[in-house]
Image (cartoon, rainbow, N blue to C red; front, side, top):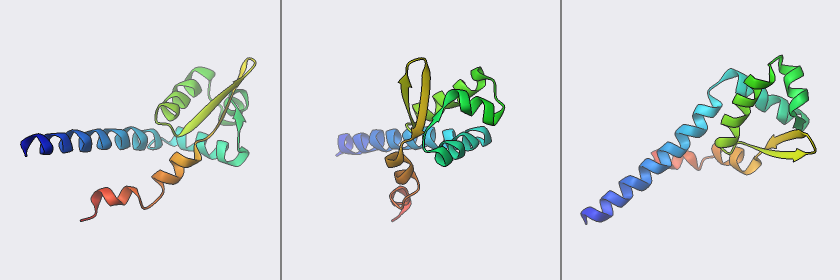
Length: 105
């Protein structure tokens, strides 16, 4: 019985850490602006994002990496440019009722 409880706690902790990472990625104004630009364009080149958001490439790369690590955006490299788009399945999951089930009785 104790082993089952310990496994459940580890799984729950892992789930909480996953959502912490995702919500932390969303809890930044610059990253929300990035997501808005990607949403408006459907797909956007890093060079265009840098121009639109008036961010140096290094800061933009930092924010994009956090969003990618949280699986919120996807990257495709074409030649020397990187293009970003929303990971719709992840966005839909985060914005759905599924998450609230963690806190329902």
